[in-house]
Length: 194
View (cartoon, rainbow, N blue to C red):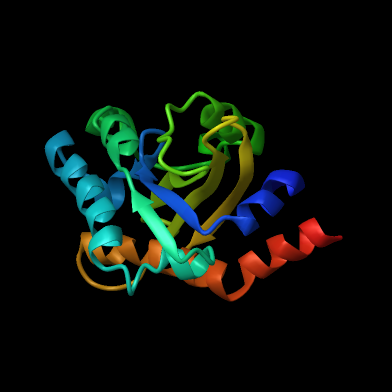
């Protein structure tokens, strides 16, 4: 986990944040569970992003990150997610070599054309959806839109649940925001106060 204490303290003082969406451009999906055409796969990526915004009570980013106001700008991830192509993104098996390091994610984040609506921008980068192990690997990225610096970068492994591909994998986002609200945010706050 990477945490810039100075910038995170600034983030704590802010009342507003921009949600930039879920970025699937680096993701790999197991053939078991995701043997789809590019069009169908991209439709799921769009649906998962829409769901987080349309059901804000369930996917409560504002509560998780302690922000009373939130703006939404999915332009960045919409553009990135259009680059996801089924043959390339779908693999037979996922192994450790498919995983990114913290340094990889920080480097990737610094190259993003992030929205400038608020001082801080939040995004989730999906590393993998693995039906074989029933695990999603996700990176939470919090960025300073003014300096383009990474404030927070942490990897999470979450388990899907439910029925149908859309709802089954949407559960990982619910679990992620729930865990941030219940424990992770306090852990981050305690780290900057040490």
